[in-house]
Image (cartoon, rainbow, N blue to C red; front, side):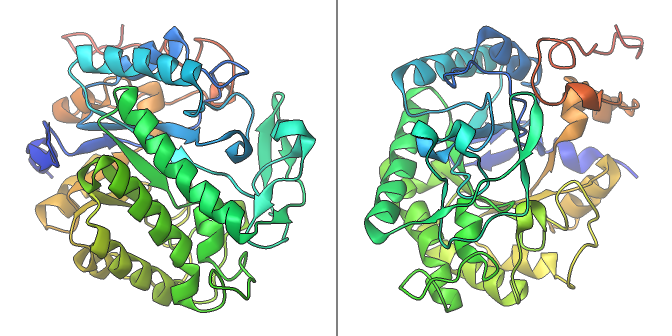
Length: 366
C-alpha cells in the first residue's frame, strides 16, 4: 500500500501543512515545578518539526486546572516566555505548532491543587483514575461541585489561555475535550449529574463545551482553534449511556463556531479501535464541516488509506513520535519505527526524551 496520500500538502486556516502527519499531544512531565517549559522541551519539539502539524502537550489554563506533576501552564508570564522559546525553535526548524489547552477537573489530587484544596468537577463524583505526582501514579482526590460563577470564570480562563498561546508564538490551540477531563466530564452523564442548565439533557451537557469553543474562537479566531473529543474511550472513568447521541449532537453544535479542525480518538485511548459501542466514524467525520484529524492505533498504511478515501484529512500519531523524532522521514522511506522505552515516558531528563537516534542516509539509526 502506497503512503503517498500522507504527503499531500493541505491548507489548515492560514497554515500550509507539507504533509498529513500530525504529532499528537503527549504528557511528558519535564517542565519546572512552576510549569515553565525549558530549553530541553524546545529541543524535543524542534526535533519533530517535520510533522505536518505538532500539537504540543496538554497545558493548564489556570492553577486549578492542574492534575499531574511537572505539567506546563500558560497562565503566567514565565510560562508564556518558556513556551515562546519552544515555538521559536519549532518555527526555525520549519515546523508548525498548536498548543493543547486543558483543565483536568476531577482528574487531580490535592497535592497539586492551590493551597491543597479539593479539585473541581461538574458533580461531586470521584474519578476512577490515577494521576502522576512526585514520580508515581496516585489516586485522584474527591472533587467539589463548580457553581455557575466558577464555570463562567473557567470559560474565561480558556479564552485567556488561547490568547496567551498566540502571544507565545503558537499557530493555534487545541481545546482538550477528551479523555475524561473537565470538558468531557460536563459532556457525559456518568460524571455530570447536575440539574441546572449545564446538566440533564444532551443539549445542556454540551453547553460548557460550546461556551469554551465560542470564547476561544472569539478571542483568537476560529481558524486557530481545534477541538479534541473521545466519544467512546473509558479513560479516567469517562462514561456516557448514549455516546452516539451525545457526540453527534456535540459535533453538529461545533459547526456553528467553525473551528479549524476536529481531532477524534477513535476507540479507547491507548487501546483498541474497536472498543465500546458501534460508532460510525465516517458519519461523524461527514457531520463536521472543518478538517478531521483521526487518531488511535493507526499504521501508516491505514492512515494513507483513510486519507485517500476522504475519510480523514489528517492522522495523528502519538507514541511513535516519542522514539522517532524523524517519524515522517521513516514513513516516507518505508523504514521501521524504533520502539520507545516506556519507563521514561513520564518525568526524568533527556534520556528517553531527546536522545532517540535519527536515521542516516543509508537508513540506519545514528
